[in-house]
Length: 226
Image (cartoon, rainbow, N blue to C red):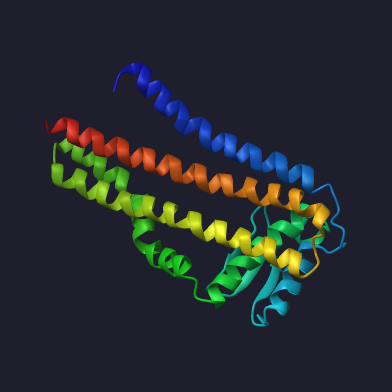
């Protein structure tokens, strides 16, 4: 790679995640200040959708942090950050419904979620060890180590790619549930979509960066062996 292409490459790696994160925060801050028409907090929304889908064994809890919302499949808990747990905002409703979307996926044994869960051990190993193996392969001139690093990194990249359909599906489920339960009116569709789409951007950016990194190391390996 030339110096110019390297600068462009690393610039994209740096800017893309920052842009996605900034977009999420900006969208969230805007719609967290606008109350939803139902007057329901994120907790209320999550409980209603869970009950309407017969998921009485899934709890809803408050968790610390900013935008730390998530679904824990091991403990069957939807955890919402303080603002989303307590506020009746459009953003809180959208995010709570999205996390419940994951709970519905879990209950229905959604294939991509099951596949992603199965990838967790190797993806975690890849995230922790891939760079060490690749660097070891470079310094020791050991192709085996380098290829092992690429192999492990591929699992981490695959995890990021499989995350995309999981997150998009959860957002689609969230939108459908918000409409069918009457939490969101037709006039709020656009705003709710903006919140859900902004959140999805972070996963798209993460997947793009992961793929670019993997391709870079594959190309470096191929070039070094020509």
